Length: 274
Image (cartoon, rainbow, N blue to C red):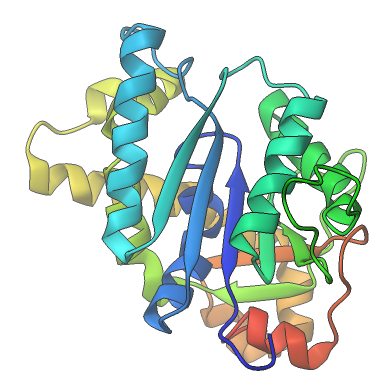
């Protein structure tokens, strides 16, 4: 990493997980000319109230690819079934292959205590793969890495069994337009399924411009609590005066099961961080 720009791999459970949780960091990486790859481990086929899984799998792959194009990132959707993911050897091996082939410096994923079973399965699989990416006899057809990447968990607000303990907090206020633009590509989700699940489908405007305004408000409402949840860490990192002006953040906790970065490496992996 000393002679090249860091590469970012985001391993989410579903199409749109990467943007929702880490779209700001992904945007910053691309603004700096760094390579970004976002992966949905599942096919996204369960997330709708009207469309069939067969139709949805095709649609969500197209939506994810379009979202990646917004910032010039690669977005890949795998074929593991949505809402039925397990931390299996097949999933672990696919993740090991991906990490070895893409050679990221930083991998982002879900915590193993997240609310969704698919999220937990991805987080567990990444944890299980973290050391094995260096073991040559595991999947010997793909060259083992000499050094494992740094792995970090994407933000969540859950407190049981343990609250997330962020090592890095990023102010993503300047990235909100791009994050919302990426999310808007997932039309089947942000304008259909998620509002239906929340009982607010009737509030989604028909007009395209009004929809973007609605989506920014919806997304802001969902992620604004992050700053309050991690207020103690924000004050410690920024000071009380600066902290109060920060409205939208992404927070990341470094995994103990992969490479442990020093302060200099953290500054390269998480530019403009607190």
